[in-house]
Image (cartoon, rainbow, N blue to C red; front, side):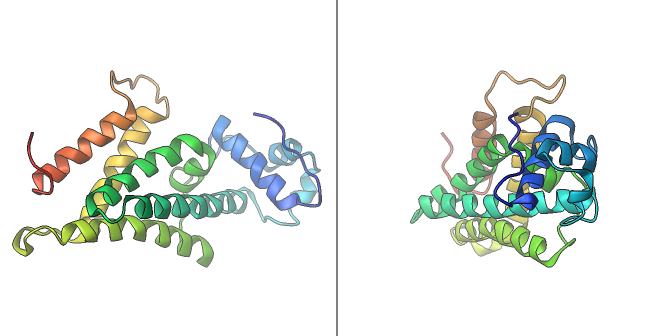
Length: 204
């Protein structure tokens, strides 16, 4: 990773950027504030101008991650319109794309142990991103007979869990976990099986 460093007075963002590099390299508990400060090119004391401790720094990385994640999910949903099916499958692909492109943010959001309720802003952004997938699921649910229709929140939770599982097992180079298939193909086929089971796409 390149050292971004502290410049133009943006100390807070320089520290977040440094933390994201360290999170990607060492995990959320594998670095100290002193290391983040050194990576950002400032003294350890400078960190406390903006963050009370490492968890606050990671929480800010997660907050920024949810901001990006929500925007990507919304773009994916909008790009699939007016087809409810295309919008839904597009959001699933966006989840995987985000995890691969923004690994530091992803880890801060989902693997750091930081609660989304740590700050109101973090909770709001997390809810907004989750709401996009729930809206896509709700659109699709409208095409299922009401007697067989699952709650949209359950529907979206299943796809979220499926996407997360593919990321954790096969998209982030987990030791010993290999697949002859690309993560994108695994997720695409898994979503297809799920949707066929609900009668939303026809059997081949």
